[in-house]
Image (cartoon, rainbow, N blue to C red; front, side, top):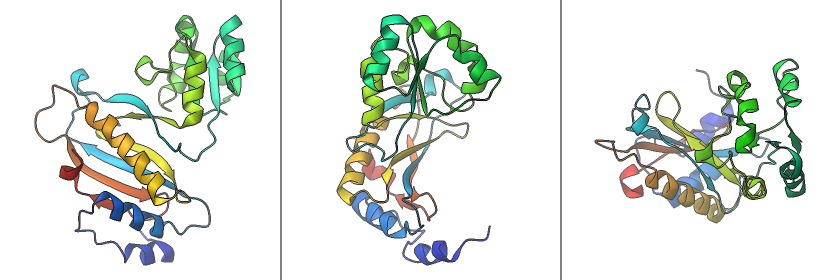
Length: 230
């Protein structure tokens, strides 16, 4: 794969064979984010889990102390008083059955997170084939199926992110933007890792964190020493 000049220059400062500590890794990642836009800083965690087993699945959510730096658009499926509550909390879109054809037939997906009250999950379930593969399906473990829609919307707006294993047993999560200070990125990273370590499945045998890498959207990844993180 051919890399651009900027990527190649940024990569020169990073020793691929070295496992860095958190502060040094975040400093390097900030320096290597040289694109013309404010790059997202992401963490990629390769686990020893086997997601094919239900008792080794990892899924949850955590509120990052400094947010993600991204404006998040929230869609809430709710009715009556709960719909009013969602709007008052700042949800961009609120509705019920009438949103199903809009999403199914018109391909409307102008939202980043979906919240639903438990009584609306029958309606939301009809959209499983569309929302599921995009990681948008509301889930009680992530706090997005709830009667407390005010808290759900407030948490999401404050920087709540969801983490889950992908098909290759890796967790990919944003922890902020390149414009964040090193302290802000470090705080967000530590908060995320505490949640991931707490979420370790009891059924897992062997090493939990196989590798942890921090990378900007367009730049090279910096590997951390996973042993020091546990």
